[in-house]
Length: 377
Figure (cartoon, rainbow, N blue to C red):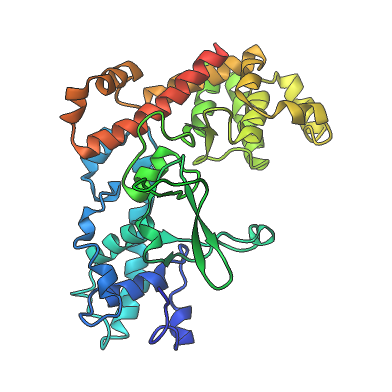
């Protein structure tokens, strides 16, 4: 969808639409076109009779979202989304509409419609990847709607890819496809919690080979503080944590990400475990030597594959083990109960769609966490 016409012709107007997300110009265009009877894009919009059919967790009642998704990371992500959506609408969208009353009507172009269109963009838009040299300097490219390309579903074991060419987009198969066989695109290497958060669905176990589980960084700090036997040891943990924060290895809202075969945040977790397991003397020496900048052996050992995790030193294993147990406590049910539910076809089919999707998210995460427990026990 090209954002031209009234918006493209007003440079000052475009400047007023700058936002952290970068989505506002597209969303404004969607607001206008969706509610205009003679829009060139009406055949496209007619494919979605009601955007409420996009069952993103942001539309679930808060109680249901918490009950079904506690521990998965989705409620926290949705809370941030809702705050940002309300802020963008009240501080950018609404003032812009009020300054263009001949085009927009806040009674028609409401916050609720804006929220539904945000979900629409989350579920169906494409973002051209940045060139490697631009990744550190530029924010992500703005999203764009691509009719026809967006009708393909996603699976991790996909058989087609979207390719970006200078003048066109191409959907290219990656393997021979038989007559009648469904063509699957990939939305990226996405964990189930990301798929449910952004697209409203999750892949049943064991289909999502890109699934992950998170251990909140502050959970590792909590585990380290719990094992401290004296006030002096607790003080040492606090100093070690502050030092890791200075190195930007940890943060209050960060998470260590575990995949099926390795830790995806290997450098951060490796250093965090080592520092938090140091004695006071080792920690002082480490600070004086400015860390392990030139220690190639330590760098090699920071690659946390499943095999390397099983070879961690015992204090690091114990800290990580305790952190996993604390993480598992954040869920409202245990792995066995969910395994039993998945194995009982009748009971599973009695679940609502939301309950089924949430179950797939929780179960995959817990399987990864339990796999880690087996590796390090």
